[in-house]
Image 1 (cartoon, rainbow over the protein chains, first blue to last red):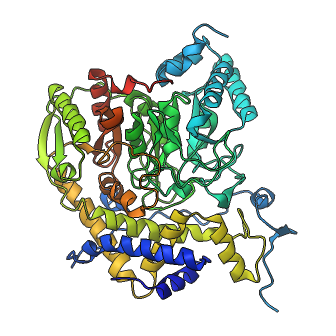
Image 2 (image 1 turned 90 degrees about the vertical axis):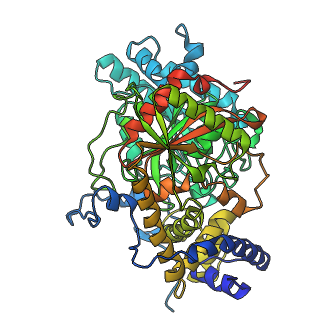
Length: 101
Length: 499
């Protein structure tokens, strides 16, 4: 299987990454190189095998679902500290370019 | 300065802790000593962020606690943290331009727990951007004393890589700039640099150490661990690192804290060490194999029995890991959008353009590649063929280990197929880097504890690490084997020239 330049452009858009044409070409070659080692994986017979998303949950704790805690507010209001590193803030809100005309 | 302070960096963590507690040396003197070493060895590029005022203030607080008689187990011990852990008082970058200058409003749980025990933070250590890499060549922020990003140097040969992604941690410990360091391991990022730099490193069972405040790469794989010169020191540090964090990390295991030092001296008589034949195939370099074989002979002399085993899907772990980890990364890194924190592009036309330009400017090549692979394998029409298939084989790999552990108590083999390579040698070939992770990926996918123990030297007099893999929650057993081996050998005591 081999990706095309159009695939790369489509994925870059999904991933919200601007790629210069030269960068896209380089990435196309590298990603196709990578998918050449993925092929062996596709040939494995996995009929009846349950996918494993969290290793230890299965092995140590049985197939228990991820733990949920009570839905209670446990964090203090820390808005100012949490927004300190934001690129643009006004009146406690994050600013983004205009979305609706 | 107190007597003996000039050799503080040669003390083990246990000795240093005792000397501090007995007030033979102060925490401030200790911190100053290591900060001076950090400046002296700036050429190795291990540190990316320091704040000497904060370090010394923490040291003064430790001295006060020791004087008041209420000091914690690590009072005054300087520890350096991989820059993947967020810290309130030090800039936290994850090695990325995206987070240049970023200040976290809180400390990672792991950092906070060590601080509660009195540890003093020396600074933040270089790593591959967002912990994605095996060579530290994809770090995108400058090291302390450097103007541009620079690959961490291996103290045994500065023309070679220290390994990755916890390369700064391995170099800092090997060069005696820090007595111990934190690291994180997603696909081998503690074990491989520990092996390459001749130190001891352990990644515990997935879920044992809190991931809260560890900047996420691949959440079902990321795990914090300890890096130090010896198994004894790793046991001390790991004991302070591992405890449940149920309110803040939903994957944190509900397992009580453990003193990993208690069983260090247990005898190895009758211990069954599984030797997976797939770890000793044609890809393994002869010099590494010779060192590993010698270490295994040493284990036999100590009473252990070597048992041949098979981990038949070892090679498959490469594509499985490099599908699953990028898939999780593409999701985790979607938070870097130029809105809530981190870099935002200067010029853009609208919101979508702002996202795209921000991410194009903020992320380096390797991170972009993994985000792209991840977005692709999760996208409509490809999810079942790649992502789900990888997760199914992941279960088969975990099951293979459980089959193997019916025949043995621990598994041993090489950490990496070769010793540390030259800087730049594989820099333009991502797949060559991925292939070199073959021996560390299986345990990561299964969520098992694993460690690297110095086992000798190979080509170019570069260190070789013996990998030990245990069953779930068997960290103490791994540390026991490593400690007994270190009582019989002196590889962990050797140090690079000029250090």
